[in-house]
Image 1 (tube, rainbow, N blue to C red):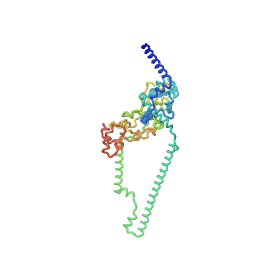
Image 2 (cartoon, rainbow, N blue to C red; image 1 turned 135 degrees about the horizontal axis):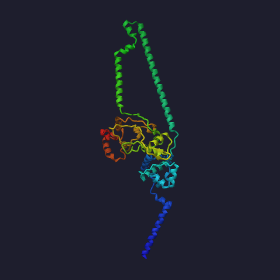
Image 3 (cartoon, rainbow, N blue to C red; image 1 turned 135 degrees about the vertical axis):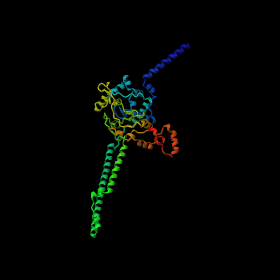
Length: 432
């Protein structure tokens, strides 16, 4: 009897458990509780991380408050089926679409079958951090332009520049007039003095001196004049030779034509695509890397497909936009290198950008304003050394520097630690 009761009790328990599991599979309340572990973070550290990930990987196709290549992402965590769905879609959107998911299929069709990059390297926490940033921006709302627009500011600045230029012109004209008046007064004084002295009656020698006239031939043959001409010519020639030697290998302002007219002003400026989205090595390797054509195709498989410049990309990679297929005759795009360092010099992008926290504009200038990129900095050894002498070491949050900072603070009198203080001027740091 006891054994039968135990079997009945076990059987009843199993049936109840199965019913609970089945109910949980269809009950939205239970499903919501099951996913409640995934909570969008609101702490500053996670949001900051999410902002960096979003700007580095998502801004080429998405904005929070407006459509771009893909949909606007404001309230995306409320509009989509679930947070788990978002994580799966971000990691591999094609897998979700091919599974027949209705929401994913409709979204894919709405945006002209544009394939989203699969971010398989993102962890769940990375995606949650991005959602934290999106949530923060959603709550802030879209930015509203103030009364003083950028165009007005530009006009005001242009007017101020014009006024300053006008004052400078007036000042220069005034100086020329004053000099002319001084010259006229001097000539008048000389004339009056000569007339006065001649009226007093001068002997022959004095009269010859007073009434002597200047001869260009005499001036040209005089030893002082010949010396001054030779000295000035030698000084100018010497300066020209030295200046020329200093410019050997310096390509500041170098702005070559490229095989495809790529505008940083449009991509990095207007569309705010982060540098590291295309230059993938800038934060993790020595070289920033020239972007490969597949990065271009992340957007241009669907954006501006009829553009003559985009057709050049298709020709290079043997891509047919009608059938969306690739042929066998693929070749690299022959971009012209702009920034060159001699082989004897070592430079590491990740060391400066990731560890040092140096912005791209520090060395490359306002790249967001360049329709055609040019070399902004001289990239000379003196320029690098000067930067190492002036730049503070970014030690915040990096335990590697703790001992160095402690020693430096004891001996520096409160001066911040510069790059030169940690060996930034040692020859072997850049020459090996």
